[in-house]
Length: 206
Image 1 (tube, rainbow, N blue to C red):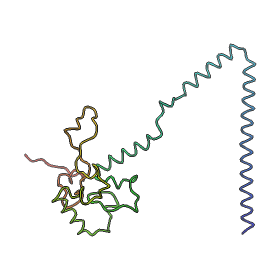
Image 2 (image 1 turned 90 degrees about the horizontal axis):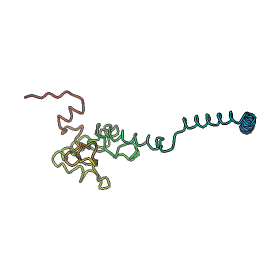
Image 3 (image 1 turned 120 degrees about the horizontal axis):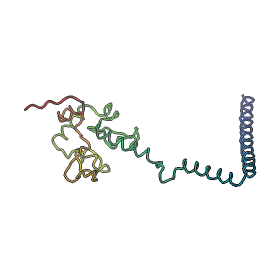
Image 4 (image 1 turned 90 degrees about the vertical axis):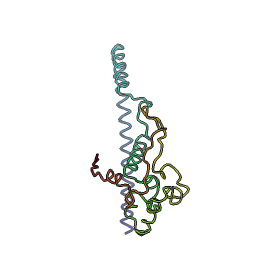
C-alpha cells in the first residue's frame, strides 16, 4: 500500500512539473511571436504602419465595452430574489421560508404557508393546526401579534399592505396589495380566493 501511495504521489508531482514546463514554453513562444511580429511591422513602410495602427485601434474600440455599460455582477442574484418574492406572493409562501432566509433544519410550521415544508409538516397534529386557523378566523390580529415571534414583525405578517413606491403613475396611497394570507389552504380560507388560487373558474350570477 505504501509503495502504491508513493507511486501515485510521484506521478502527481511529475504531472505538475510537466504542466508547469508546458506553460513556461507557451509563454516563451508567445513572447517570441510578439517580438517577431513587432520586428516585421517595423520593417514595413511608415504609411503602412500607420494604417495598421488605425485599423487595430478601430477593431479594439468596436469590441470594447466600458465598465459602466456592463451588467453588474449582482444583477443575477437580484433577479433571482425578485422572482422568489413574486412567486412567494402568488403561491402564499411566507418570507421566512424562502430559500435564502432560513435553513431547512431551523424551519417551523407557519399556518397558511404553502411551501413544501409546511405542507408536509407532521410535528403539529391536524387538530392543533385547526385550532390555530379557527383562532385566526375569529381574531384577524392573532397571526401577527400572537402566532409569529416579535422578531419577524413586518409586512409579511400582514394579509394586505400598501406598496412602498410609485411606479408608472400608480398611487400607492389608495391601493392595498395582497402579501400573505394565514388562512390559505385551510378550511377557513375564503372560497373565492381558493378558486382563484386553484385555477377554478368563477361564475358571476346577476
